[in-house]
Length: 281
Image 1 (cartoon, rainbow, N blue to C red):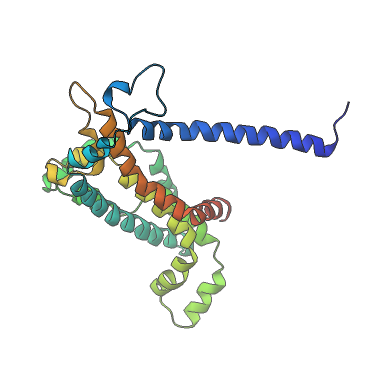
Image 2 (cartoon, rainbow, N blue to C red):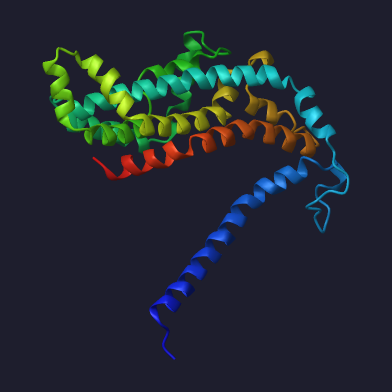
C-alpha cells in the first residue's frame, strides 16, 4: 500500500523529531550528571547502579566550592582578563577586517592568505618561543601575556568572519559618508560597527568562551596564587591522591553559569551572526 504525501511527510517529521530529541538528551546528559554529582557525597559518586537523584542533597559542596579556594578572587581575575581580551580581540579584529574588506593595497590577497594560513598553525609550535620572549621582558606572573597579545592582531578566524560581513555592506553607504566629509575611521566607527552588531556579538561570544575557559595560558604564565583564574582554581580540587568530585562539580557549575546566561541572552544575535558571516561575502 502506497503512502500519501502527507503520510510520508508525517513519518519523516517523526524520524526527525525523534532524532533531535535523542541527540538533545545525549547533549544535556553530561550537564545533568554534573548537577547531580555536585549534590552528592563522595561515597556515592561512583556507586553502581548510579544515583541520578541523590537521596540526600549535599548543599555543603557549594559552600566548599567558594570557601576551599578563594573563588571570588579568582572570579575577579578571570573577569579582568576576559574583559580586556574580549574587547581587544573584537575591536582589533574588526579594524583589520575593515582594511581587508574595503581597502585595496599591493599584495592584499597574499597577505589575507597568509593570515588565514595561521589558522592551521598549532599553538604548540609557538608556545615555547612566546614563553621565552615574555620571560625575557619580565612579564611572567603578570596578566600581560594573557591580555596584551590580543591588542596586536586579533584572531584570524574573527577577522575572516568580519571581513565576510563587511564585504556585504553596500559601498554606497561608504561613498555617501566620504562625500559628506567623514574620515575612514568615522565610517568604520559610526557605520560599519553599528551595522555589524550580530557579527561582533558572535565573535565576542567566541572570545569570551575561549578566554573564560582558558587553562593553559594562566597555567604557563601565572605563578602567584593571588593571580590565579577560575580554571586554575578548579584544578586545585584535583589532589595528589584524591579528587573532591562534589565540590569540583559544584564549582564547575558556578563557573559555567555566566557562559550559559550570556549565550541564552544573546542567542538571537549569535544565530544571526553565524548565518550572515557564513553566507554573505
